[in-house]
Image 1 (cartoon, rainbow, N blue to C red):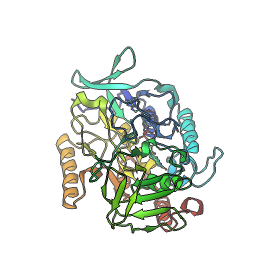
Image 2 (image 1 turned 90 degrees about the horizontal axis):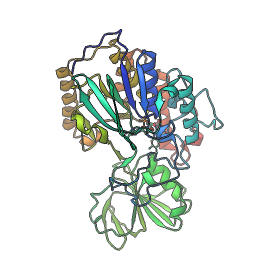
Image 3 (image 1 turned 45 degrees about the vertical axis):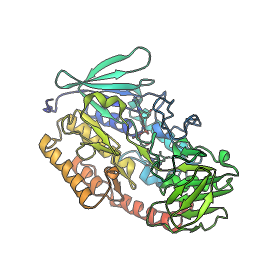
Image 4 (image 1 turned 180 degrees about the horizontal axis):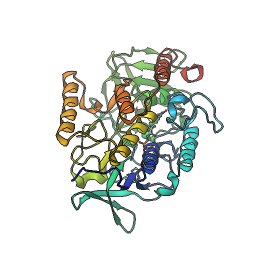
Length: 427
Ligand code: FAD
């Protein structure tokens, strides 16, 4: 596939998904005068931020590939886990807008309205084809990509480039390596299928995980459940009853579970539980890319991808936005990735050669191995800003130091005020 792109070319570009990443990508591509079509399988913009009270009832763990999939994993009580200034874009901020919930950490409806406004204001809404699920992407004629849209009459259209923005919080990752889990006959649910606490009333619930969802959901459930037992593999946690709660305990990781409902934790404590709730994250999933054969998912490593965005073999004509996750400035990172792709597709930024990109990818893998970081964390940037700084410098849109300070302070505040951090944080 040829990679030479002249800065005068206006390309025909497909964007898959109209969530935060797809909207940002479409805006940047339009700014560079490309012809853009956004394919969105649902009937509205916002992706994850469109709360859906439905859950995947028949299969709480999302294991059946033929189940009817619900996209969003939001729970009803969800408030952002980042303060307002970190939930906006470089030239379109949430900090200076309000849609009725002006809290520093607003509820999810506020973010959805913000994204809807963004899509309207930048004309992105006009290039979205709703109810259009991409079911296949295939290489064509050496340097084109054919996009197949499903639903009744399958249609195919040929594009110069495809940007994948399909989100990665829909396919549950389940803690299926717990000794005895195959014998467990009681209920199991993944946080993807958690919406409200009521179904957990008077139950004894074990919540596995240590991320924002585990912490939020356990507190939500504790309002109605008999007991909530949080269990984490993290070396940072200490087994104890949680401050401020009569019915919630923190435990170390699960040692073993039994068919009769017993759960034994590493510290030796044993309880009888009704439900195990897995807040154990999600899997990357690109069923429509199978035929290209250029990107593979192996233990949640999507690769090879240069700087989490470009598969060297097809760069820049195939690209991904939103795979990497940084706990600090997620929206800004997505925006920078979108700008990078749009500039690369306009010939205004050149990429290294295919071989150089591959060397960079393998260097990253090697560093992970040397530091004994499991493969599944390939796209995790933790609280590091190096990547965002690199992207910002590369595309000429640096992230203010002030935002980095807010991110750092918010994190410290969160750790020291676990039960009240959202309502007590001030900038
Ligand atoms: P999504 O928002 O998931 O959008 C993907 C879109 O692609 C969807 O509209 C979907 O319908 C569409 N799609 C998928 N497959 C296809 C296909 N084949 N064809 C056509 N369309 C398709 N981030 C923060 O910054 N702050 C937070 O506080 C925060 N809280 C979160 C809480 C939860 C519970 C979760 C799950 C995530 C949270 N996030 C948060 C991360 C959040 O996912 C990102 O902020 C952002 O929404 C990701 O956007 P996206 O565009 O990559 O994916």
